[in-house]
Length: 457
Image (tube, rainbow, N blue to C red; front, side, top):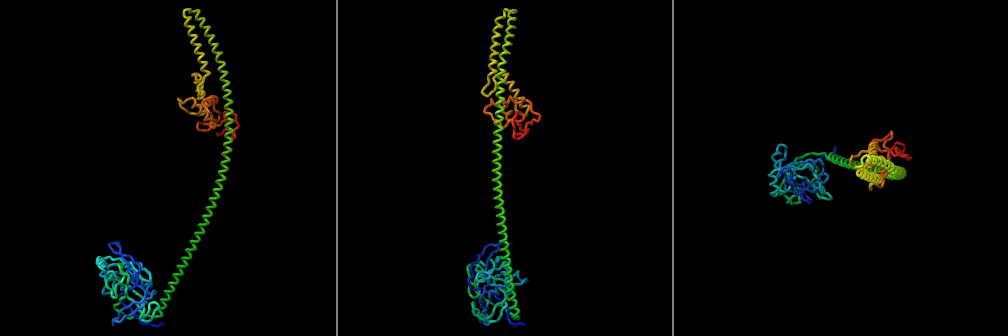
């Protein structure tokens, strides 16, 4: 069994001296409240006045002041206007409560205990504006009566071991000079004391064991935090390594894709070049065949023009014989007949000249020849599904027919297109393409095609 010490549990009202540090100024809060921040406790020597008037020095160590269990009683503590004549309880809280402390208590610079508060009633707000800008905590303290001397804080008569906070009071003139608390314009805080005392008996060994257990618990918490931090770092490092590997893989894939694309481009270029050369050879062959057909056509036209005068001369002789017979029968109309014969001869001569003439586009100037040529090109167009209107010019019709059957063939003039169109066959082969299908020149010319039979270019 450990040594039993007589310690006191006393009611305390403190006003704290010392540099507080930067504090928040009052601000408007929800519900017309005023939000303030105050320092309500600090480690060190607290001086109290005993009943006989003597001074009592009590030591408050940081490890005792910062106990989580004790600070939890300060969170949400009731804010009063000056210290009430009794402790705040559930039965009288409505009578004394003018605000409340925030649920988070902060350990600030130099170990000071800081807390934010909401001032809610008009009485408290007016008191704050009228200069009641200091704070003083009311609490019960468990005091160890052992005296001694601390290497930092100096001599003391007793040690405060635990605190149980009851309320935080707004006040104006605490004993011992100006104090801080509410951050209006003062930084210093002092300690005052007073209130009832009561005797309690505490096992010192048990208290020591409690303190050791709390220290061990703190060490365990630190170890857990360190282990968690190490795990987080390992996980982050693993993520970074995984991300690097993924980035390297994506880089390699992109590089391979680029190389593959370059190979495809080179193959495509060679294929296009080969196709272009093949098309050029085929076009030259078609052009040569077309020129040969045009030459044959010109020879045929020359022969037709040579044969035409002989037939016309025979008709003229027959007409002259009839005219002579008519002259013998009707001598009176001889002059009129001769004049008519001369006119007919002139017209026939003019027709012969028209047969041999074409305009600059290759269109015959002779109406009869023009009509025959138009009908032939229309027959070719109808055979192979080439459509156009009745008002389409002859040169445009010829271009449409040649372009349909031989899209790769290009002439320099309309005359060449007209000449090429009129020599095309007017009957489609058995496997004739429809209007919207490409036409192979193999169906009309005996030119070897690299694409095989019955395939478009």
